[in-house]
Image 1 (cartoon, each protein chain N blue to C red):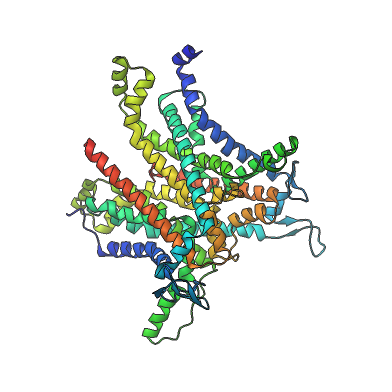
Image 2 (cartoon, chains in turn yellow, red):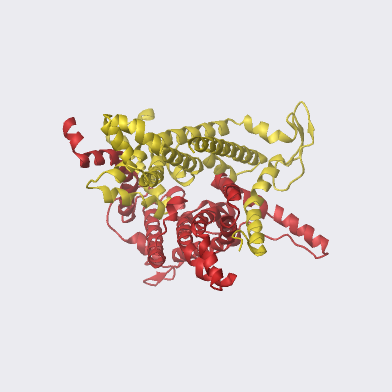
Length: 298
Length: 307
């Protein structure tokens, strides 16, 4: 019996599910070329290139960028550029910190025995089993109570006041990233042969050298996939950011959400399309790099 | 002191885990405790918290009231209970639909030629990397009265000469259900695939040798062995659906109020953090109870970490 033989019904069902997964995305991209500013109906592509934008009612008749009018519009939007900067600043900073402390915790949990070990292991599962909103409002309450207390006790004014901002978002993102990094690295450490490290120590390497030259290179793929997971979680996060951001720390998801509750022009679609393309390129690049590495070692 | 540390393995472990423990304590456990403390407090007129001990918020959630319109001593307002019920029902329906859609696709990928599997999986992941908020917005385009689905239905109706009225789909409970299913579908496909892929081909051969037909092989071999994936997927879908407020906010248009919306509004519009905290705690307890009984019955799948 051919193990790869499937009933045609399974294939049909699979194709339908793929259509379900992709139809919204295709519509999203298509509408980014919409000539209609109101973006309710698809009124066709913007037909022509011209020196300046020509509109007729809510229809864009021609534009210096032609069909890509909304993409040019997007590039000029300062709010979007600011939000993109914030999103990346938060994701990079939080990923670096979460990866370092998460890897440390994974080593501790896998290699050492200490009093608080069961508690630390258990606490890592909390973000998986409680809804994100519960965590979000808990952190919001904590920050607002502590900041309120600090500001009144030390009667801080103006810029000296503690407020929500990039700092609070980064600190909170680290909190939901760390468990994922730790669990991924831990899984990697489980299949780890200790004899390599013992050999290094026998040959006179101290602990730090052993870690740097033997342990780290061996767990690096796990650490990197943990970091990648953490990074994408941060880019995608809406709920925690929603409750912990402040003036000047708007991220792209928060910005898009704000737009959806007001007027939506095809600019939102252009932004979404660019987003999808950027993420897709990054992921494909990573796959290529990882593929090369695994070929090197095999 | 440094020398002491070199010999003390337990201290080394504690030190390595310390930053993570500080973070988990400070941003997970203390906030949860604070939520509990605030939930039994009272709201001050300017929207702050007065620390005290009163169960008023919980009584209000159950719907019991001493402040009745018709002058009775007590009355019952099921508003919040119905919101909790609606959220539970929606999470249940979403999970069932997601399993029904995810299983065939996961099975298809797992039984595909090994060389093609990665590409098929990649196709599942691409929508997942599109932002959560953007994915909800995409459904607005499809479901609107002048949207893509109505246009296509209109064409079909025209083709078969059937009179057609555009359907009102956006801002309905159905729209919220579709949005939720779409958002969380990949979280079910991945763990089911992982557990299906582990099944050894020799088991299928053995089943065939012993005379089992396709249906019997499926119910006696495939399905039981893929249950850990279904369980892990259910946890990854059910819990977030219970707490999400964006999908209902955007696709439900304030018509479909879930616990998530209730909590969010207490913190932003109504400015009553004490009531919001109580609702949040109830939400947490509800998800924990469901997860506990569910995993006790079916076991806690390892696949949860894989996804």
